[in-house]
Image (cartoon, rainbow, N blue to C red):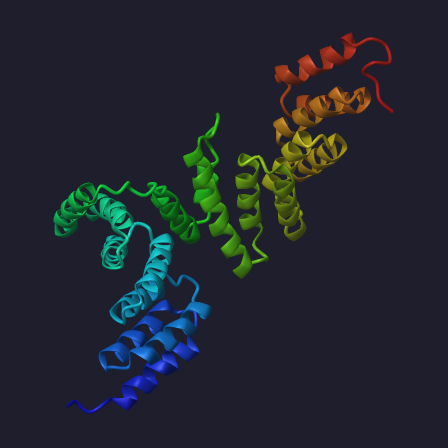
Length: 329
């Protein structure tokens, strides 16, 4: 019998203790303990890892396999399901879930997981395709009604979440499209929001993250949440002109027109040579009946660009307004 390597075990435990969020440290320790015939200690080590690691899908996977080997099929299935939910595009996780579901007697669920594994596997799908055929045949011969097909795991959303976690600016690209959003679009945006929330928990002083969160919340129709995030971005960086403009739009959507005008004025002070800011301020003030202030904003736009037709049109509308209807205090 091979002598136990206590030094290696001590080193692995030290890695798991000093890097509690590192999934690899916990899975390496768990795998080592299993190989040395100490499955109970492996389960304990992995449970500790679940409580500490940031993305514990691989820990759930290994723990599920250990429990399956110990004959606890239902607990194994639960952990393998969590592994798949954490990394829904990983063929190995879906395959192992299907196999354990089948061993635990959950034939219909196993068949559904095998179908998803085949869809994920590419060349590797061949190793489970024959199992899928056997499972489908067994299900048909049993005469049992198939379980209600669960919704496919949101693979696209999981990919988006990982990408945004690495590159938060991708979230802005996701909200660039216009038009009605379908269920898949909503799921994608919610995935981006989850990634941004995790990043903000680590970096609460980054205004760009709040800006992205505000854009995503706006696209999801969560205007109050979007306003809160935009205001946080401006609290951190009062000179963030893009966040100013976003806040203007959000205040308008929420009916807070005074705040919209004030924020637009602030943006115009930050970027006094941006004609569109003066035009936007002029439109806001004119629509609120503050004609004198609106005229001043339009004139400032003309000082920057004397050919600005939109500013001239705004002034013409003010002049054509009924007496007292377009003036302001």
